Amino acid sequence: MDPSSPEELILVERDPSGIAFVTINRPKSLNSLTRPMMVALAGAFRRLDADPAVGAIVLSGRGRSFCSGVDLTAAEEVFKGDVKDDAANPVAQMERCRKPIIGAITGFAVTAGFEIALACDVLVAGRDAKFVDTHTRFGIFPSWGLSQKLSRIIGPNRAREVSLTGMALTAEMAEKWGLVNHVVSNDEGLKKAKDVAAAMLRNNRDMGLRYKSVLNGGFKLDLAHALALEKERAHSYYDGMTKEQFEMMKKFISGRNTKPSSKM
Image 1 (cartoon, rainbow, N blue to C red):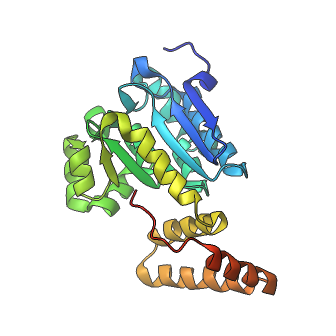
Image 2: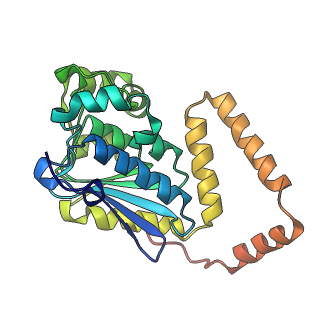
Image 3: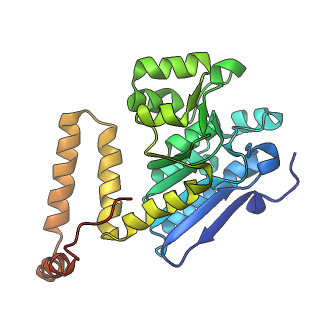
């Protein structure tokens, strides 16, 4: 097991632009996760969510793999200790994070790594990226959402094939099936993820946070309740605005560059 401290294995860097970079840094073990790493990763997202200087987060793995899942030498410690502990659950903290999370996936995203990728809001994949669910192969019960989220994104029949066979879902197929937003060359993944984050931060940051919240919240509901959620949030937002804020909105809109933005 890697003797490095959790802080060295989960790196956090903040860019002056407002983008934070979180890196799983255990490349010799294909970025497999120990319990201390999970706690550190969960804590990193909790702190970045609370940091007003951070507007978007890019998550990646160092080396040949994004994350190869749980370090099975620590399986009992992880599965018996953390299934119910949201404070040590990086996926739970990512789902609570108000800031948009862009995953830069290179190499393997296996089981827990797959679940962490699914907790991102946007996925950029290198051409050699592969998403693999090995829960059935190793007799591990999913607890970070993979059994429910994947079917809602790629459809139940495809999800059943991926999860019950343990087949590797390539970057090309993941893009075709709607799981991945962009497929780029392996050495361009981080740059593309940063470009997506930067494009988000060029807009109204407060509305970006609100929009992510209503998108993600509505995704969990049927359409009628999701539309009601949007209407409720909209009424609350506009009812709370002062005349001065409406004037600022008008000035902001009139001052925006009218040229069409370049494609990402």
